[in-house]
Length: 273
Ligand SMILES: *[C@@H]1O[C@H](CO)[C@@H](O)[C@H](O)[C@H]1NC(C)=O
Ligand SMILES: *[C@@H]1O[C@H](CO)[C@@H](O)[C@H](O)[C@H]1NC(C)=O
Ligand SMILES: *[C@@H]1O[C@H](CO)[C@@H](O)[C@H](O)[C@H]1NC(C)=O
Ligand SMILES: *[C@@H]1O[C@H](CO)[C@@H](O)[C@H](O)[C@H]1NC(C)=O
Ligand SMILES: *[C@@H]1O[C@H](CO)[C@@H](O)[C@H](O)[C@H]1NC(C)=O
Image (tube, rainbow, N blue to C red; front, side, top):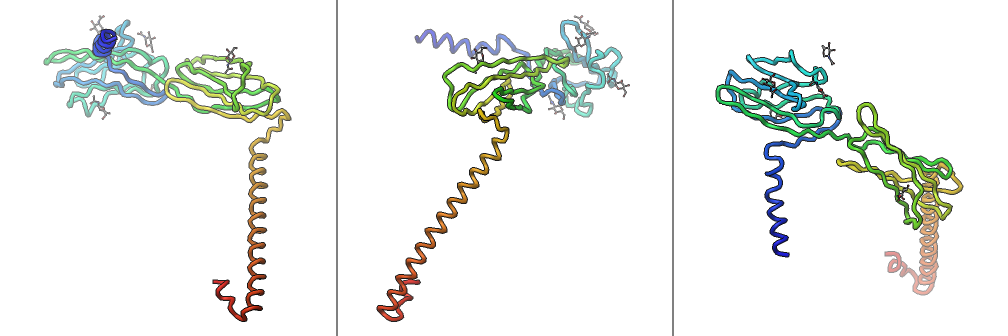
């Protein structure tokens, strides 16, 4: 037991260093801008190559002779890359990548070279497209839940309130678009039981969203207005009851006052104060 925990401890201690000593992980959101960090020792004769994919040694942004050199830039990065030129002299060779795509995921190399030496740094870029809109709608006994434009591949789960003891007959389809984003849709047929609330959750690495639908066998699609009118009826009944109670109390008090003034002639102030 003690040996095992020591082993786990050592594993945890050495794991991050042995696997990714030099990789910096960066996660960016699909279609937004992203900064790939890189630092170096600046001199005026500096050369910078941002390389991706590393296996093809292809340049997505180069800088030397004191200016950007985009002649050999990979086409799919055209108009999307820039350096922070005003920050170079501070040793900042970070790359600004705009409108990131799923295809931009992977390992990048920042190569810098000058009279002070040369250096490679590696960045592992991950792209995420969070779950945004999730829609749920009911058509008769069939409930469908869907969402689009998610990355990486999302998970979809159904649940009911109160919990159902029979497995839900669901069918889920996932489709990957040309942009490599995932569209997901799932439908199920509600059981002929008592009214149930159906919830659908779609989860990916970054976030999770849940939508809820109230199942009604009579399939009136106006669940929300009906609920609120029920609330209105309840509050009207409560107001009516309160008015009745107050009336009874006031009438009772008035009668007692009349009785008291009849008996003691003008002592009603003790009652009304
Ligand atoms: C990668 O490309 C750079 C610039 O084009 C070149 O100087 C270098 O020798 C290449 N490295 C390899 C391993 O092909
Ligand atoms: C350009 O980048 C894409 C990835 O965005 C890659 O698939 C392709 O091989 C690269 N082209 C060259 C010539 O390296
Ligand atoms: C990049 O910008 C130039 C000039 O605005 C334009 O002609 C070219 O089509 C753009 N390239 C891409 C891939 O968007
Ligand atoms: C480089 O400069 C940019 C823009 O000011 C900044 O966001 C980034 O954090 C800097 N990176 C480093 C490594 O200093
Ligand atoms: C959805 O259906 C599959 C079989 O098609 C089943 O294994 C799974 O439990 C169902 N999911 C739920 C939430 O009932």
